[in-house]
Amino acid sequence: MATGWQEIDGKWYWFASDGAMVTGQQEIDGKQEMFAENGEWLNTVEPAEQAAETATQTGGSAGAWSENGGVWYYTEGGSLATGWKQIDNAWYFFEEDGSMATGWKKADDVWYYLNGNGTMATGWI
Image 1 (tube, rainbow, N blue to C red):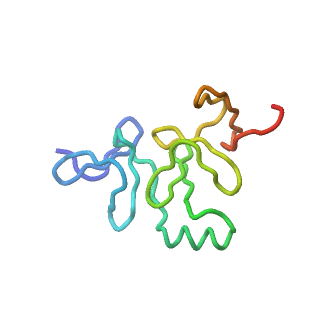
Image 2: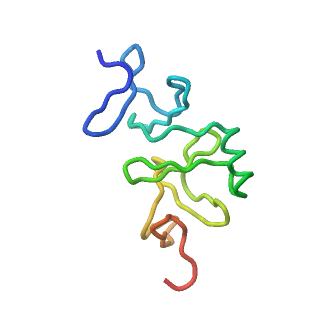
């Protein structure tokens, strides 16, 4: 029975001592790790106190950005952002799995364009 960290098809998963694959936020080896609904590891969640301190120092929001395999995620309060989220005066859209959207996105029957950095384009495109 597989337990602990396991790499499967180039993606990382964590299996509990009973062999069950974990999802959501989990504490592993003293770190808060975030896993998608399918069990794929997404990122290590920055502690809320550290995120708030970083945000205060930089004048930004108290969330944390992370990148995994070229895909960006935003966590705040230990949860992945989904749907529309305003971060530092810019709008972003996060898919149901928490991944940041780019390019054309249809939401509520309206088309939006999200730049390569995820920010929603405004004005003429």
